Image 1 (cartoon, rainbow, N blue to C red):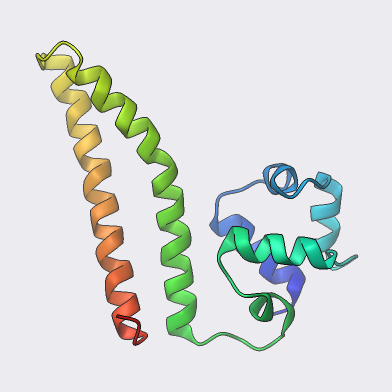
Image 2: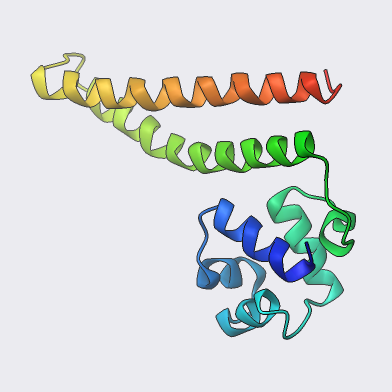
Length: 139
């Protein structure tokens, strides 16, 4: 897998549009498109920024070697978790809103079920990451 394919894969796994990634890196959407089309390459500072943003090494981005399957799965788990963690701010605000009067009515119970569902998903994701770390010898 080359750099262009890796940028595309990491961006889509993180549920980012080209425009959103471009904004995070302070480049144009067209620049990200050119990177993904293998029509140009990011400057070194942008490679480092991509590495930081997607929590992968610069070696992974720049070298054509394929990561082992366990590392890939763990990377995907962490990226999915980052997506869930962005929802946690909304969940936190929902909980504050539900609890502000100290009484949980019928509508708020329904909202609580949604919140609890999100929290259960995050909890399951954390367990998957723990398992992945353990399987990769990182305890």
